[in-house]
Image (cartoon, rainbow over all chains, first blue to last red; front, side, top):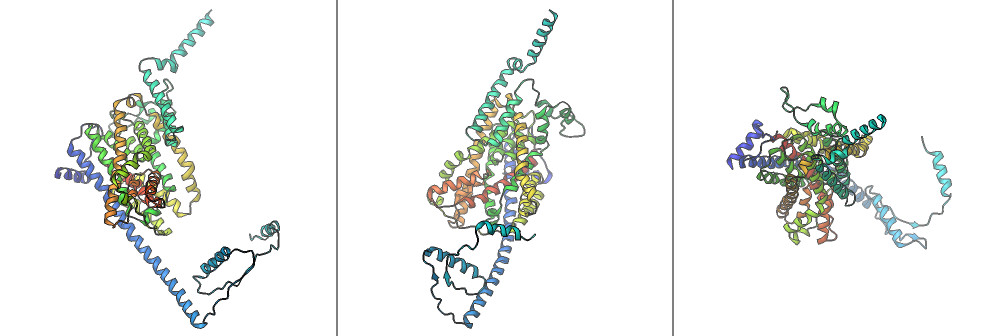
Length: 149
Length: 407
């Protein structure tokens, strides 16, 4: 065992190598190849684990701090807004008949997602189906001709 | 009368030079068998879907090289010639002047050009996000390379030469380009194998991974361990993904310079992709470059398969040791996975350890499948991708080590 460790060290240090055409390798040589190989692979990848973990933690910390700052700013704004105007209970939105509850729920979710970071309080007042003012073709034509270049 | 005579003479001259004459003279029967073997691999590639992108070019190269008189490939041109100036000297002048089509294409293999370029394409297609999010997957990628070194022992026990041992061992890395990179550098005409047989074994077993892995995975883990559901991976920022390839290149190439071509090109391709600034290059690397190199590599590697190396006990040894290599790699990965399961208090599913065998993405999909057999909603795929891509890096490092030791 000691002999093979020594030969592994020798291999790495002196660059003593094995001739490719050598047959019937003895146990010591084989053991040193295996030990060297496994150790080098593990050492290399462990170094990478450490470095990647370290910079991963640095980035997580940076991201958390900026997230925390944004959250704190948002919370502060929300607290101020609450103090300024005690918000009246929002009336239920006026929903046109024929629109499903699920659609309304999705619209409310989208609005709250949009207003989450800004601290403004948005209230859904009514939901109506938009009547198309123009046909799809004419809308496309207008977009095509007014596209900024 | 003389016209008929000279016509008959010409015809008989042509007949004696024809391939058919070559097949039925002397050792020509071996060529017939090799051609039939090439049909077998073509069938496996086309009908059974065994890694057809490589196996079909390899099998057709095998067919082409065993056509007598065609002169597409000359194994004798690739032997080392005594030269006082260089240690290993190949007479490229002869190759260029007298070589056939596959000789010229094989230059890319012998010059160690094609495998690193394939790695460039692989890097451009790989997402290292799951690995960066969970760096301990590197351990599983390293563990699965244990299969390589234990197979080295097996090959040495059979009394094979050092070059053969290293080339057969690297099959356990489950990485075609890596196997070709190592074997093209180390194998000589004195070895009992050539690049073609190593590549055949490597790609056949890569195709058999879905059959080889699951029994070993189930044997080494308990139902409870297989049922572990792993949490969601954290989001990896773009800057982290940009730093990663540069970092890996520096660390690995400085530690083991002989691994630099493979790891360097892998990371180069990845950086091109992550930079977002080289879309055209990335598209080419992922598609046209990969395809061109795959064709050249496949057909020229197939050309090296010769009757005396394939139709022998040595090829059988390669095939047996190859399956042992894959099995051991899977086992080592799963066992280290079990250790991590214990150390993490049951948070890591050992099944992702088998994905350290770098057959991307098949090994990861197998981890997913076996995990789903226990818990149908368990989505292990992303967690298994970490060890899977770490295994690619690990097998490149192992190749570098073998090349540094066996010279």
